[in-house]
Length: 338
Image 1 (cartoon, one colour):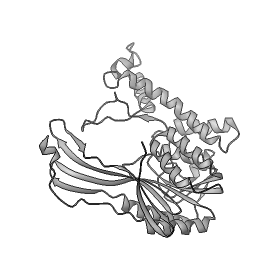
Image 2 (cartoon, one colour):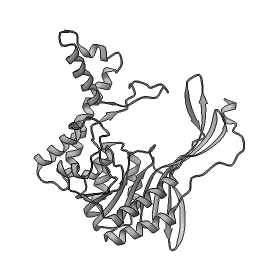
Image 3 (cartoon, helix red, strand yellow):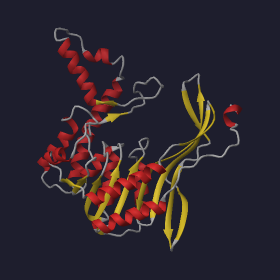
Image 4 (cartoon, rainbow, N blue to C red):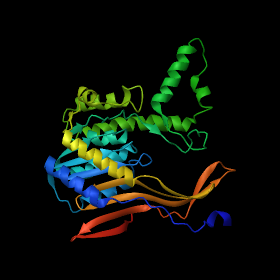
């Protein structure tokens, strides 16, 4: 254990924080659209999580109420229940919410856009299906000994395929499936699927009064598509009943520039001590509004335990951090979110 705690003295790499440059782009977008811009960006290793709502509240706390808030969102997804809380908080600060989507907006991020009155999509933008996949404590493990996500659609397809090929058999297909997927995982995923439909309906209810129409859109997003990551482009989004419109070219170009800046902030900054010890610094989630940026940064040591085939962490200083402009001066602080 002493070997694990004694890291050589070496300058730790830090990811850049490009607050001045991102603020400039946000100001330009706000001027074009005619309202405040809130940004929500996830690194591919970040996700929509519960702490994002508290971080969003930091951004909105001094923003007041607006007729329209514009939300730039780029994310691979996360928790659908957080999506509902995220939209609910935004809705307390505006009469109308417009989602600006220049790139991927998947899974739980798609759910966030369902709470927007309008979804403006650029040429490279896409939404996805929102059928639920679940990473359970009893889920199967992959070759790296990590728990994998299981979706109800995948389970149902396995059962249907088994029955189609074994139509003369009287054996229960679940008996064989239980050897690979724990029955409690199957039950949890089934429950989560019902929750996903309910969340979609609740989000759509913010701007769609017709319950039947909202249910149809929710059911389509949860069960129509053959893949969880199936890209729903602008025309398809409009076809299923969402108020999806093209994103203005000049706004799209600025949001792509903003994504480039956030991607630079979100780059891996790994300091290798040797082949089994390293220090990782990486910004995963970024939220930003006028004069304030809040982000979550991984900041910890990694040690590889070969006998367990996994990396463990030590000296974990990961935290939410903010940078704001107050009276012309920049203020940096740790945001304590439990």
